[in-house]
Structures are given as structure tokens and as C-alpha cells.
Image 1 (tube, one colour):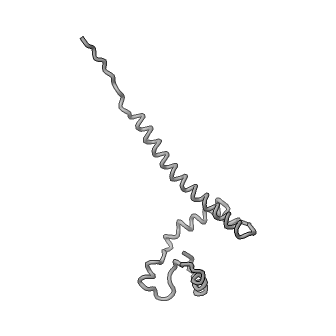
Image 2 (cartoon, rainbow, N blue to C red; image 1 turned 135 degrees about the horizontal axis):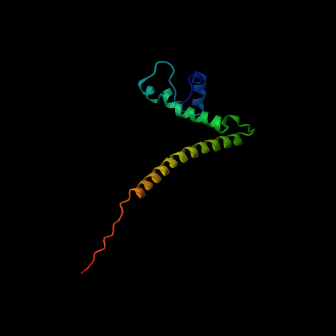
Image 3 (cartoon, helix red, strand yellow; image 1 turned 180 degrees about the vertical axis):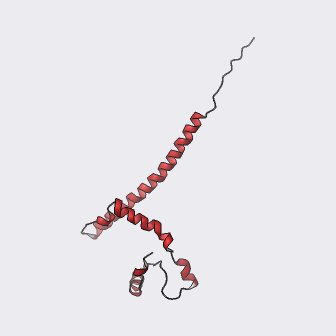
Length: 120
């Protein structure tokens, strides 16, 4: 997935040499098979939003490492944190749902009434 401005012939040739599959609108008149692989801009919004969140909240745009490995480690760590935050949010909803159901069960639990039977 890439922005249209980066999908020129030269970049496509470089990506092909590096064996990188490009999911973008094909050049020229698209064939029927190529249209199916095209990713519409609306499908990219969540991905672009995560990159924006990483840049604004987690410093993804402020990495100043000199070595390539260090930069990749920083990027991988930030993406890991983004995924953990998302999972924690999902688990929080599940946890709150379970707590709510438990409280409702406790409050509405049928009261056991013990009847003492006198034997004569």
C-alpha cells in the first residue's frame, strides 16, 4: 500500500527488483485481475491513523538513532506498544463486561428462603 505519488514507473521497477509486492492502482488501463488487488483509500485510513498516533503520542517521528538496527528496534518497540495498548483496551472492555455481569448476578440473585418444617 502506497500513496499514488510514489507509484511511478521508477519506484515500481525498484520494488520489483527487491521482490516487494505493491498494492496500488496499476498504471494504464487496469485489467480485471488488477482491480481486485487495488486497495481503496478508505481501507488505508485505520493504518494511516495508527502511524499518526505513533508519531504524535509515542514519538515515532522523533527517532534520532544513528544506526539502522537501532532505528528498526525503536520502530518495532513503538509498534509493539501500540499493539499492546490496543489489546489492553479490548481486554478492558471484556473485563468491564464480566464485572458488570457479575454485579448484576449478585444484585439480582434469587434469595433462598428456608422454610422450617415442624414435625408433629
